[in-house]
Image 1 (cartoon, rainbow, N blue to C red):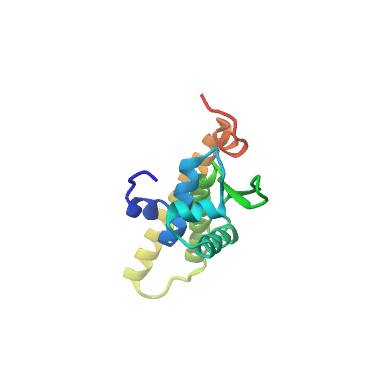
Image 2: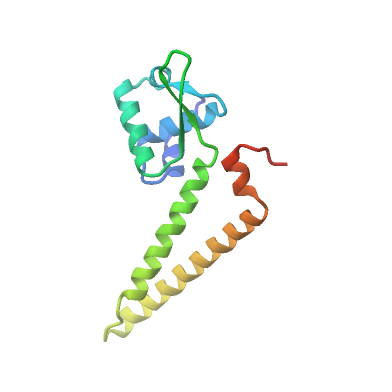
Length: 154
């Protein structure tokens, strides 16, 4: 494994523990190759059970990871090139939900609190709008398609 700071890997994959971040980073570095569970565990100096549990948790959270069978009928894993994009899509969904929660929160008699709520509403509204604009642009350029189907981009 390359000498990459774990802190950077963890920051890039928010809300993930360091083990999951290491696993996803290793898979992304190996892409387009796949690696068996046992070899991945050896490479990262982790127990197979720990690696398997982390991968299963990532899959349950909607992180795209490809599962295949290796030549020895062992489960193998391969990065999905759209994995980094998944975090942007999750952030967009989170921002939309937060905007809705802010909208549903009634203003009260406190002028200062109401002003701050309105500011938060504006910030989240503009943030969601900017993310929508970016996704529209990336979709029109077919950039998202290229990460999902493995075609090259030039």
